[in-house]
Length: 184
Image (cartoon, rainbow, N blue to C red; front, side, top):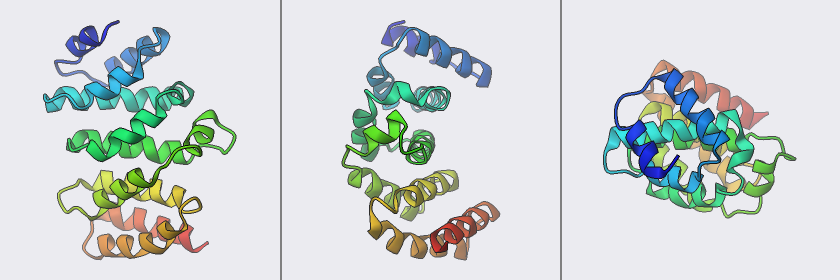
């Protein structure tokens, strides 16, 4: 499947089953994830969202396929402005950073400079226009990175407490769990 063929397939609304099927096909055909990442920046926001949804599902189904493109994915994170795409990128980072130390994904992450991504995650948590789900996934990813970047453990509690002050039940619950982990 080419980049243009994939773009055509996701040009219209698709559901979870189609996303799972397309994810499987892309994996089997060894679709270039570099191209899929690029499609998540398409000017058609719904199409870009569907590409990001595919990207997340491919990661959840087989994180190992990302090792060759992880650096490119991390480099692009500061450029993610589409709110739907932010959710998927934050969720991918949350899962990638919680991988076991011996996993290929974690080994690759350990060789990369993640500070620009860490800064972007904090920016998403601070930005009042960013959706709550993005903030929660960003918080978990930051929590997972606190040992690599000790300053994260210093900054994250204040940000969580600020979000929880007037936050929804979802942010209250997630914030309490994150603060509990930070304190343990």
